[in-house]
Image (tube, rainbow over all chains, first blue to last red; front, side):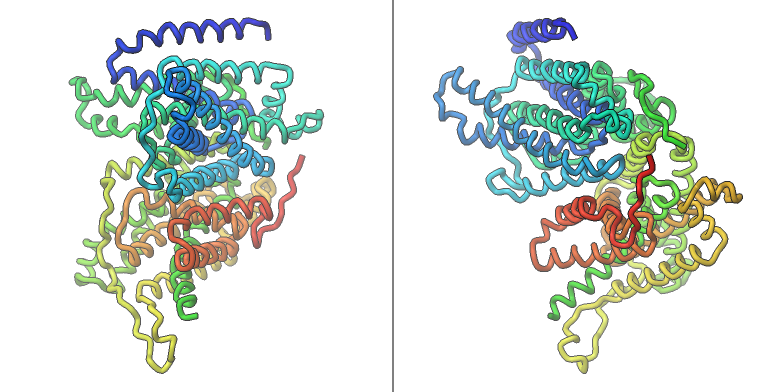
Length: 324
Length: 308
């Protein structure tokens, strides 16, 4: 890989900083949707590393997000003003809290990655789902984290710049990792684990690494989310949230970062668009209640996609056929 | 000691439900080697079939709760669930049979979410109260039994345990002593050899789905006798627990699923009774992770070697 992605990353970061200064002019509603897009891009691109490139089916991404959100929120609630009240001091604390949240999530990713060495497919999906529920259960019983009441009162540090800077960084890291010589190991694990092992690839290391890196960015996304909404609740990180992210990855096409990011944008806007369904008089009456429930639509979409185009909208045919 | 016995009784009743659902997971895994995520939702549909069918059926059998009426509700729910199971397999899984497992897995999750959300749309998201199909009350235990007479055992619990036993014996007979049962076992033993011997895989798979779904439907009705509040998402948790039960017993192994269900029921009751009810779900998942790490083949399952 040449130096081009680095230049692209730099350009994106500058563009984010410039665009960020205009964010005051956007209506709060659109601002909310735009930040949501950025956070979903981070989540989907990082899950794509685990599910798409490495072929480990994880259904617990919201769990990692919860770890990051709660760690960073707790840190900034506890130490938010310990390093001074100036903009620089609070912003650096916020940044450190985000990174710390990411690291905590990465630690959780390590814990999930290790069982993934022995499990595959359906089992791994259920175990990651179980981890998600366990993390939620722990938070629901943890008094310092607000337990069932949720945790609030964080300062709204997350803005356009931070969200999209991290989104760009996530995409950059995932792409550079996968397209490097070192990173072709991820694809090898996905395509044929036994052959990869026979070629001397340390499949264990790659699987755990995918989980750790993926979880780190999910944790950062959680931190961004916590410092944007200023209130987090354990139910916001249940398996339905995980499933939202999985749908983005599958719809975009597992292992296609561009497709997955596009799907993240689409699936963030779609529910908002469906919300305005009352404004479309041409829509038949019987369709209205269904469109209000986006999950019916998502699940149908998923079934039809799997039956007709399992590689996703933008993916290439890289699913391995099951040996007869 | 009495409290412990009480928890065992509660656990056995709840465990019977898990056992019935777990059988569906295990049988489908046996013939198709995949986890039917939508199975827990079939259980939910069973309960809702009962909700809608019970008033009419009870009317037909003389109004009011009666054993014949309750049996009719159970049979109708089992039949409808069997049909739903066959339909799910025919429409969503059969076209994907030669595809990678991941595709089938994602489809199964999609089907599960579709049933849950369509259920919330069709039945309403708020819990519904299940009609009384059999009058549930505590059984009077004679004083002569001493301390045992302080146990609380309800008619509902006895019915759940009794019906589960009958269904398990019925299932055993079908699997061990009928031609279709033999075909099922052959298919799960070696699909290629079975089809070479003239076993029609499509028919057997449909039959397996029907059998498993009927048991899930029965579980839906039996739960509703004990806890008459049902909602469209009731299948998520029960389905996951039953799945853990199936893995605990050794997935693909029929007696194992029944054993696993009962054990998970006991475990849950003991956690609720002695530790903290909020840890009920987390502990069951912890058990799952432990089994998968220590003995992935389960208690009764045989370790399968991976062929390269």
